[in-house]
Length: 116
Length: 115
Image 1 (cartoon, rainbow over the protein chains, first blue to last red):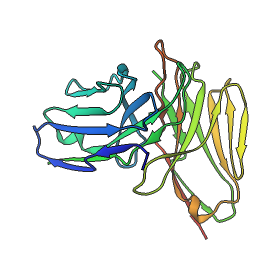
Image 2: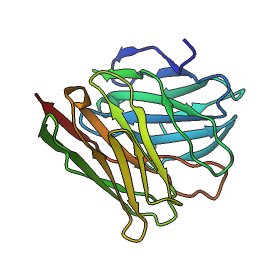
Image 3: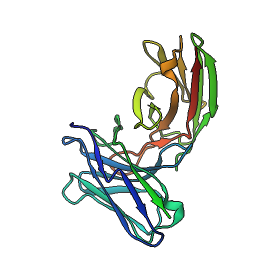
């Protein structure tokens, strides 16, 4: 399967613990996005990379959230000191685009986080 | 930043009827407007998109229209079928002062097609 893959698919944790999600984009895609989706809502933008550079972060993104894409390939999203409000589906997406031109996002299956 | 409003939140139609979903956006610099379909338990997938240099685009039973002056765009599905039942999201891509853009999504419309 050459699509976007995410790991783990499900994570249950206790409040206050740290969690990390991994995303492997489609290999030739230079852009990688993280979104959060809760039930009945659209994907909420968190952050975005072009190659290894983090170009944009949502103003809604708490300091507890950090993302990396060290070599311009896979990415990790870490949530520190999790809170119950962090419970959501975390979606990763990748795309191939020229500078300044948006293109189709290919989404992964998502990582579902439950904070008890 | 960009804000995308989507209406209605739910839409029920009979098989064969048409369905229309409308979205408005706030950033006049947005220039890319895709629509995604998300079936229950699955990932969102692109069904059609439009860029700001055209006013309408069609793909078989699906069409999208864009009114840049009014800052709204719409999804039209004709001859609906039960397999069209899903959640549909509109999105807009604002301009950025750096290379690249981030899609901002609406809250979604749950379309139910009954046979």
